[in-house]
Image (cartoon, rainbow, N blue to C red; front, side, top):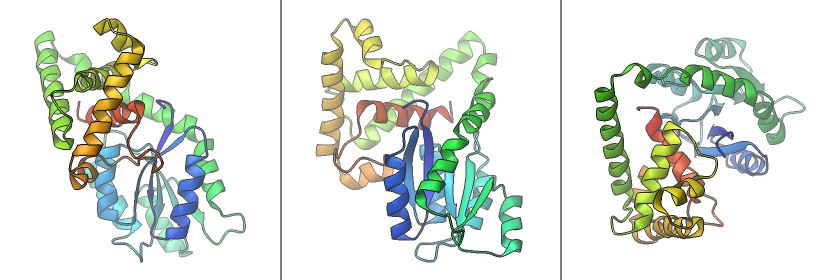
Length: 265
């Protein structure tokens, strides 16, 4: 999960979306974190979901805005980690292609190509995954936190904890559930030093069995999705959820908030 390529899809054609979503879900190492047919909403998703790559249609006739507006706003946003931009388009104008390259497009795939299909779009991203991750690691290798004094780090950690509590409150994770405490610790650990086996780490810390930890955490997530206002959940938790499950898994939840908060940490 940690090494998955996090992909945001900005596309207005329902059939195209359906094919790309299906292909992404069936491809190991690729994780779709958001889908939108609006350039403005897509910019919000960049801030919330921190994608490694964006599949971007230039013309969003059935949505709002367009891919050029998205790229202009992305440059203004100036994210810590700039996503890889894969353009998919019916537009064959060389001038337009030059423009999107100037705006930061990494690759352009014409939908008129004989071999254009969802599988080849996802396969292209998979083929450059190691390069994208290498760029991401390089940009994150030296954190501003590394240069702070002990007191400054303590203050920053307090702000981090406050931010996580605020995020939990926004979606209604109950203070009464022990799983909330485990979730917060899991998010902090994932931000600072990701642990491959989070349940084992929390088990050792709290002297409880991994199964008890996992049960408490999943119960907290399930209770939140059952009892919270669905519009608030959609507003504040924007990662895509498997419709068959209806709720995030523990790993999906923890990594979503770790990535969301880390960009400002």
